[in-house]
Every structure is written in structure tokens, then in C-alpha cells.
Amino acid sequence: MSAALDRIKRDLQNLDPEELDELLRDLQSMYRMPPLDPEDAAAIEAEWDAEIDRRVKEVEDGTVQLISAEEFERHTEALFAKLGIQRPVHAA
Image (cartoon, rainbow, N blue to C red; front, side, top):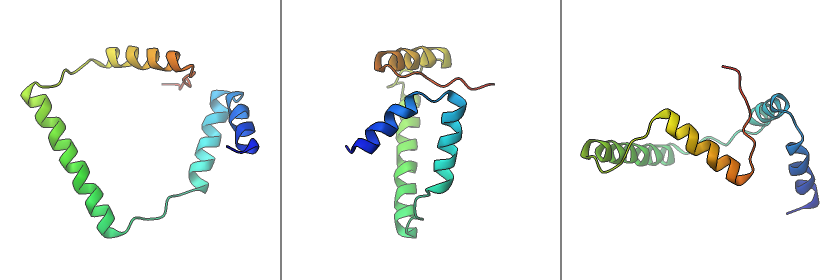
């Protein structure tokens, strides 16, 4: 990794959530992925459709355990804490 990239990563950690949100929005508008080839897009769509079907079947068959939004939030918070990541706070 270059020294410049290391410095940028360190600087990002010092931004407050609003500044980070603004930066990410700016980067998103400046750098767009090129459009997909129609055949690639169709193949990706078909893969997602198959994945959705597989997950729905798992729920219907009872082979996966669903969790509540609250439990998901607890798991997410614990993972972020374990990784030392501070989650941005967004106004509701």
C-alpha cells in the first residue's frame, strides 16, 4: 500500500460522521462503474434471482433460523466493536 493511501486512511478516521458522509457521496458521484454489457447484466440478474429463490426456499423449509431486527442490530454492534469500527450515527 502506498504512503499516500495510508495517510488518507488515517485522515478518514479523524472525520466526523457528517464529513465522512459528504466525502462518500462526493466520491460516489465522481467515480461510477462503467455500464455492464447487456449479457453480463442478464447473467448477474439470473444469479441473483437464483440466490433469492434459494434463500426463500431455506426460509420456507425451516432450514435457516430467522432473527429479529433487534438481534441483528446487537450482532452488528458486537461485530463492529470487535473490529474497532465506530458506526456513524444517522438521524432518523
